[in-house]
Length: 258
Ligand SMILES: [Zn+2]
Image (cartoon, rainbow, N blue to C red; front, side):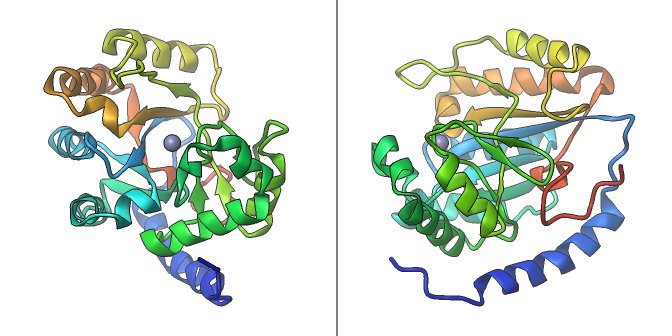
């Protein structure tokens, strides 16, 4: 699909300016607070409903990097997508491309023009209200303050950057097995989070982004691990959960106070 709507970006930016002004009153960042950003990738998929349910039950904020193709191929996918949009105080929906490369990472990144179109197509399908994107299978970054890319993805990241997107990766990943089940225990993940804050190993001091994948939590015996992880993080009120549009140094945001 060709990207034909030239006015799209101005409209998005206008929307966002209004959104940010509202946001600012509600969520001023505090430089003494430690922020955790939970992010779930690749939905809507099996597992997405567990992630939504758990975050609702625990009343914690989370960002969902969704795939346009997954959202648009079924009513079921659009329903999950809508559940996320229906709770703007708790959830943020962000762009994880339309195709997720269709499984051919090298081809995708070697054709940066069509890859950029793929992200724009996802922005249109998902109707995202922010300019945050995450690369498929790659921890590349390009915000106003962080630039970190491998050689493979650099041409695409430059194009995304010029088009006004913020490319946001992660600090720590809860990894999964070949059959899509969590590798580390929830205790281990909480320990890693504590330790990264303690040793200042995050990309941005006092801000830590956790990458997880929706499909890891599709089975009840695994979704309970997400509950446990969240409860460990909540224990003692050490951290504040935040949405990724609050992350400091995004190009198109004016919401951070330091
Ligand atoms: Zn992904």
